[in-house]
Image (cartoon, rainbow, N blue to C red; front, side):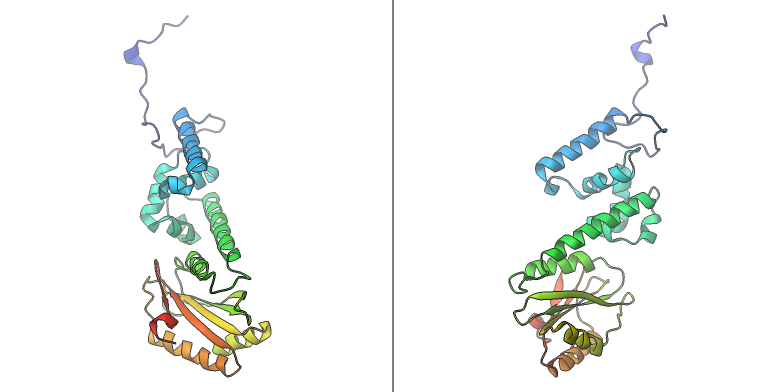
Length: 254
């Protein structure tokens, strides 16, 4: 029988509880108890308290658990937040930029794209076929969810029927970091095809500042003139910034 080791000879843990090793475990090896317990605690806190019970880095950990089952992911979650700013910034980051972070591979990028797509579909479902006035806050939430963290400008049009029910949401164009090509004729042509009676224009400013440019104002007036000539109303043009938005109607541009 081998001689028991003295207490002073027992190996000390390399990591404190909930601290991560960046090396994946050998295939077939069981997760150390501190990793298993940490994951269980996070899941239990999420299920009992909801997302408000977890800070951003722990929400990211919950997603990363699925993509990286053999390693503690806390350092990666913190690294992603440091690089992209916040939870939304991480989920909306391009695959190219995500891949620049050590530890992020195809599985992680796929998980982020799934979560992002689910968020877009959920927020869209809250506004489609709804009266725009009564669901205005939900409409703004949808715009921020889908556009606030985009790295290039996007231009969308919401088409409304005579009762101001949202009948279509379409991305018309994508551009560069500070410009997106918009063709008033195509916007109005599509409105006629959908039998729409009114429009709401939306585009984002990747800089984060929703202040309209001279070209934004000129383009808006061109679309309004083309639409009104055919009996179609332009209700508003919304510019989405990082954490706020600007309404042309509220600010007196329309």
